[in-house]
Length: 119
Image 1 (tube, one colour):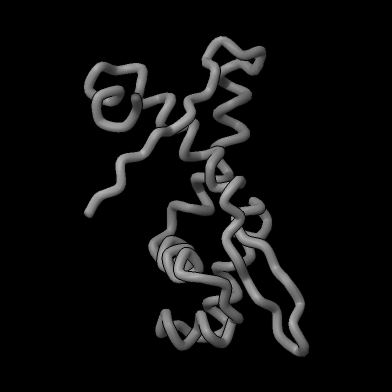
Image 2 (image 1 turned 60 degrees about the horizontal axis):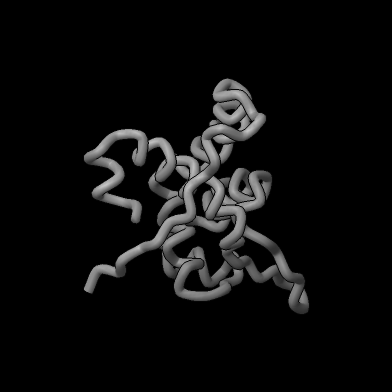
């Protein structure tokens, strides 16, 4: 059953210019814009995992998983916790909330978008 989301929108009158907001948002969206990275994020949404567990679950090589985790780490979208000889990756929900709020705010500027995503 779809979940009804109550997204807290950004204050569009804030001091940051649209150009500055775009410059801040673009790297996060670029990191999120790859199907393999989204696949890894969806797997991490189920719970924290090691690279080995992500490799097995995603059907990707260890090199490819590590390659795709790098931009997600750089943008703060995933975090790492050392555990023995492995690293455990987890979603950083607050970091993911930024792009979601920015896109919801953009959508809310139109009547159709406001009805679709925001209360």
